[in-house]
Length: 184
Image (tube, rainbow, N blue to C red; front, side, top):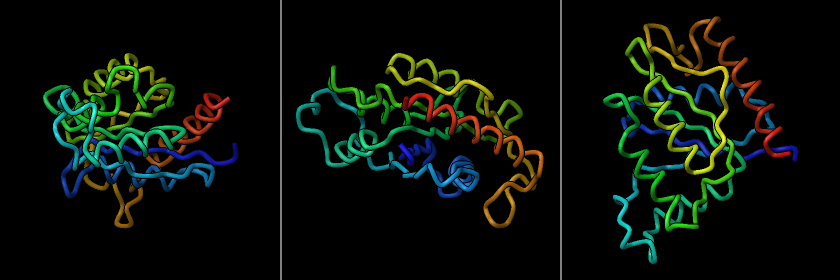
């Protein structure tokens, strides 16, 4: 396969989300072999098992976008040492009903940025635990726990520091190789 469709899930609904900025800036470092598609999770109803037989249009769209992706990229903030509820809701919707888990087998990268010094380490560990249960292989190293400081992003939406750009370019290079390996 020459190109890979990567579904991008940003787990923040905030207008000026740092994680949306991170996901967008990372895409600029990717080769043309990766085609990124943002998968919206802001319009999903709260998961209710009673609705599994007739899911809302937004849930059908979510599942369709995940199904058409060959890989995933999660960009998540950390809320109270875990993932945001909106992300857990999306994970639940796309894994249900039992036996209809569209996440299964999709290789995923996980990144995150916050203003806190530990970045999003705890949220990412919780997300890895959930994804392991959902049969989503996750890219392991290097891990990307970033702290947003003055000048992190430049005025054009890229990375404002050479060291950060170099680190994330290395991450992207390894992520692409890993996706290709997973795709067989």
